[in-house]
Picture 1 (cartoon, rainbow, N blue to C red):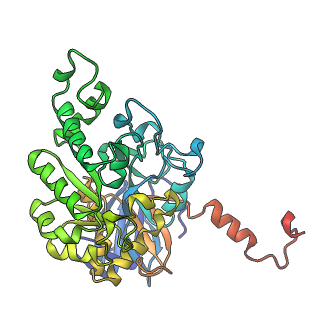
Picture 2: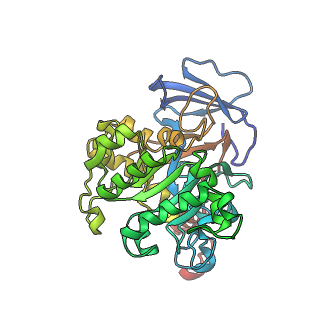
Picture 3: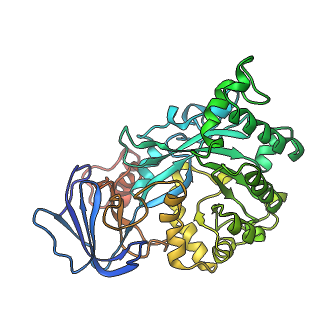
Length: 413
C-alpha cells in the first residue's frame, strides 16, 4: 500500500528487495526490512511481516541504508553567489573561529528537499569561514526538515590548512602552521591564559572557548589539506597533540602517504573525481586515490571536494562513489564510503547500516544506487517517509506533456 509522505510513527515492512546491510549479513537477496518507532527492528530473509505493518513491494529493487554525506553546506547555503542567501562564508569578524552552523542552519532550505528525495538521509554541515583558517564549528543534520534535525551533539571543528588556509593567514605556510600551533595553545590553556586580557596569542576569548572541546579530543577536527607535504604536517601535528581526533578531507595526494595515514589511523575523505592538477598542491591527484588508500588500510569516506561544494548537488554523491568503483575500489567499499564509514568517522551512532536497532534511514532504489541512471523510489529518515517531490519535479511534470491540456501555461498560449 502507499504510505503518505509526512506520516509519523508508521510501521513499515519493505519486502522482496536486494538488501544491502553494510553489516555482517552482507547483501540479502529477496530480503525484508522491518521499521518501527524510527528504528530497524529486523532484517533478513523469510521474515514474517507482523500484523499492522504497511508493506512496500521491493521485488526487483535495491534496499539500502540512507546516504550519509561526509561534507556539505546544506542548510547554510541557499544560493552561493547571493549574500542574503548564503551564511556559509564569513567576510569580517573578530570571532570567525567561533562561527557555528547551529546559528544559521535552516531545516527548510530548498537544497535539503532536493537532496533528501535523492536518497541523502544525513549530512555533515561545514562552515566555509573566511578571514581565518579556523573556519568554525560544523555539525551533523538529518534531512527530514524538522526543527530538531541539526545534531549539535555530533559537532566538529573545520580547518582550512592547504592553499586556501595560506590565503587567509600570512600567504605562506611558514606562518600558517605556526598560527595553528598558537591557536591550539590558546584553546588548551583557556581560561588561564585569558585571565589578564581578552585575547590569547592569536585567538579571542570567544574563539578559544569554542575550540576547547577540539583540543581536548571530545570534538573531531576536520582539516582540509591536499598535498602530501601538508598531509605529513598534519600527521606531525597530531603526533605533537595526540588528543586531537583528526580527520582529513580533500587529500588529493594522500595515496603518496597512504602507509603513514594507515599507521596513524587517521580517516580520510576524498573526491574520486579529483584528478586534475588545478593547483600546485594537487599535482599528484589521481582517479584511483580512494582505492589505493583503502588497499593500504586507511579508513576512507567519499565526498565532493570542499572547493567544489554546491549545496544543491550533494545528490551526485552516489556518482562519485560509482567513479571510485570504476577506478578499482570494490562496490561494497565504495558504498560503505558514503554510508557507514562517514557515520563511523563522525560518531553518528546507528546510521549507515541496516541491522536491528539501527536508525531507520532506508532507501528503496529502482536499480544499483551507484549507477547514474538509478533513482530512489522511497526514502525514510528515522522511520518517517519523506515527500518524493520538489519544485523541480512539479515543474517537470507540468511541462512534460502539454498535448490535450485544457489550459496551457501562460508561456505556451
